[in-house]
Length: 365
Image 1 (cartoon, rainbow, N blue to C red):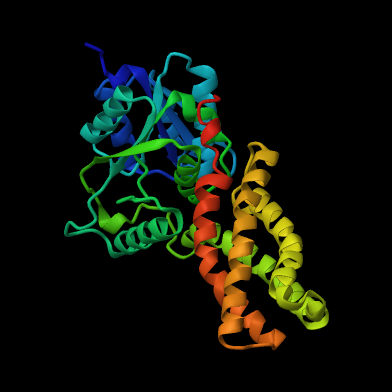
Image 2 (cartoon, one colour; image 1 turned 120 degrees about the vertical axis):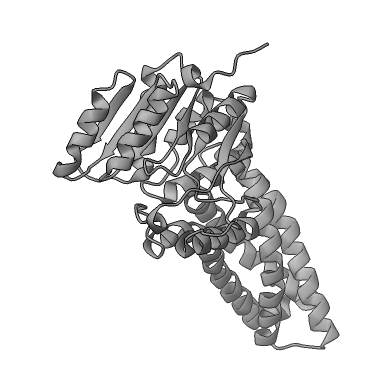
């Protein structure tokens, strides 16, 4: 029977900014439970908090990485991932935890053991936010992001803000390359897991809050914006290409529609879409989905989607123009806007799941 002793086979990663006495209790707890590899990151804490990290460094099981200035939780996690990948060859995975006492030892071990049983999955320790006593800030933040994750990304998560994650070793390099320096990094990690085809499993954990979660450094306004701005990139890219598309469609219909005769809508759509699609592809490839895999493959897939979508758009605009016996270019443009808005949601889903997917690269590390 295989041994799933995560205390000896995994490394605890604990990023911290201006810790208090709970930080030492957490460290002592993981040491006493038998964890042999602990990587602490001092993320630019104030001078009066340095003794906490000196105490950690005195423990034989601990390594302390220090940032001279605050760089953010995302950077702290990525630096720790790189350290484990380069300096701890015998470790089979890592478990990220918080230093405020929210994660109980039994839950940390449960996540680690579950990860060791299936080293293709990331294990997420998920809290039950339906229990009484959850601070309003945490409840509202998690409910909002959970709904947005489902609507925008097709990811069902009960706890999008959990800091308790057990990650197999083979993903550390790719996770260290994910964009984001602060709290948005943990969200980016979940999105990249989806795009790379990395499966996750939720492990139920106990919900622990002290002092209304006062020790958290999560700012509900600033950090929510860092999270949600990722979701608007596709919309902004599409809006820009839509302006190009509609503008060119109107101009071609207005000044050259007569030359195309009964194919005026089709001809105008094709000319407009050739220009707007190239701009849209490059914006989505480099900015929205940050595609680092094969550019040509992504472009081929994009146009396998774009071309049928273009003909569907032209066909529907033609249908509605004839249905309403419309010959005005401005009305045709408005009809096209309504049609393309509906197609937008279908296109987004396909681009996210297929065109810019990085699933082929998940086992390249």
